[in-house]
Length: 383
Image: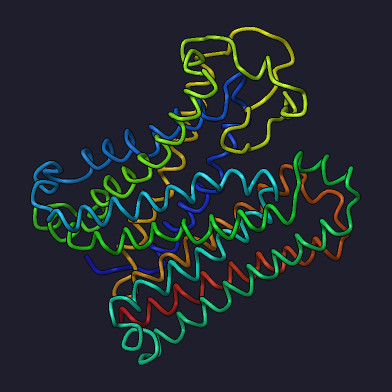
């Protein structure tokens, strides 16, 4: 199958939409503490969906795993564990900075580290990027991506500087610029480890191809291992919170600890924001049992959407030819584009001046342009 970079860009856009949208269903979860809904959705993200889709779309999944060298499997899981720390603090970033600005900072750092480190470590950075016209075009696309991220972040900073404290709280319940930036930096660096895990799993893709798996799907077994590492990090943290908060009964319909929490720990019951690990998901308007069926379905939807970003990522990467590492840039740019759109949908920008709104749309335009440039660079490289 001949790589088709333009098709790969489309797949990356689909993955970006899935990633930018995954937190939306969590906003509808009621009377569950953070650790309960995060782990419930995470089981779909990190365990159920990866193994299900890999089993359906690849050949001899268990045999491929059995042939994988222990060192390769261990590296994939290790990078998944490190990525898990980024995921844990990702919700914190959304809580303190909002969708638009939070995603811009976190994913900007992810873009730089996740795109450039793998070819540098593999020793072919100069050969692939500096020594060819297509590589130089891809580097230009990376530069345009970073410019777009900076413009979006600058727009967010100007918007926040112009708002009163009351207006900030109305748009983002617990806005805190300094705390949010600090958390975002940590989250961005740790989140880039997912790209390292995918790079470490290249031999697994070869084993899966040998077993008869089509080129679009050879990356799915790698996701099983990397995401399992993320499950370990998140599972340990959530288990500790469940024990500390005595919230395990919520899975069976028990009362939420939020009903007994001080009001200062609450968020709006009708529009709960992404919350800090260890804090309560919401303070319900009235006591009672959580709506179990709705909560489970919403968490399943959120978790599966989170997985689908990487499902489409592996499909897109398979179409990028010898510059597959540029997929990370495309992925990050797509997430920021759709994350910014969600920020407008949730009215985070409703009080911003027209010039600030124009600035953020300029940033989005640069990111769209970057995906076109990178797709073109891959296309001429594959010619």
